[in-house]
Image 1 (tube, rainbow, N blue to C red):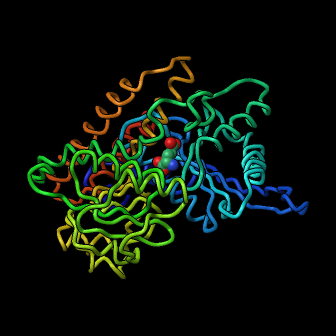
Image 2 (image 1 turned 30 degrees about the horizontal axis):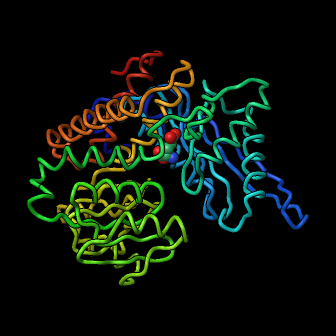
Image 3 (image 1 turned 135 degrees about the vertical axis):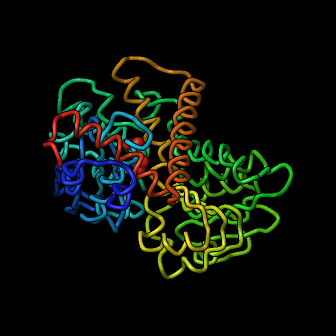
Length: 403
Ligand code: GLU
């Protein structure tokens, strides 16, 4: 944020306001387990900033969830919503749990307990949660249901990423990957990439929602996906992986298909054109940044490149499309979902895609132009672009004059 504030005019009061979260909530979640015992989980919800609109951001279920992580993710959401210009602030929530170790019943009771505990602090006009790592449409449906019991009314706009049958938007499921894909297609001209003329090699780290959809999009237009990895390991195939078959296998069995096994560390260091980290934060750090050989990194995950690894990638002339821009397609379609819920409309899939593409391409070009004009990495340009909008909102409420 500080580096971004050096390339665009920002009022000191904006930086002061953004230096701390507006609200942070810690809750305990007693859940009856299948064996009759009681387990008390810990959950958090952070509304970092709401100067541009209600706080917005997902809920993650992961064993490594922590207070600093939730705050950092909520801060990033404020910038993500500002970078694409949608009228939301930033929020995030999480529960410390490995959901793979829960039964379906335990998962439902935990999800409902979490929403009960935060219900007073969220709402369509205050803070709007959504899916994140290890949470999905079904969990959003349970949470909406719990919120509706709390208010005694039907409020689909309280949460996004719901199943389409209960107020979800068409096109939300693949929106994160699609947004990144639209950016990639626009960037192809600048890079001189033409997958039909010369194979473009891609490695994808993370094979959940974002990674799978992105793999399918690039595979369909002729890119060669040469490696995919999930939390258990990775596979590589120089001739290109059969992505539709890999997705089917992963969703049926929970594992990647058989293939040449490599480690995720090896996947990240492969000699590819495009590296797509699509899982969790801090996978590229000072430890391995010097060994990265990709020409372009498109951050579909939040925070996959650690802050202190950026300088090394820059020295190596690796173009990094930063998370707050590259993965903003998800929250953009969440915004469409919330808009439809509040207005009582249901848009067509074509409408969603057209509007998403317009926003992603427009904001990507604006950030790219700013980066070129200021001769700065895209990450700093993206933060500066977002900061200008956050600054305009803070100033709109009145600030002290600065000499
Ligand atoms: N969890 C996603 C993100 O980090 C989506 C957030 C949302 O849709 O509100 O961008």
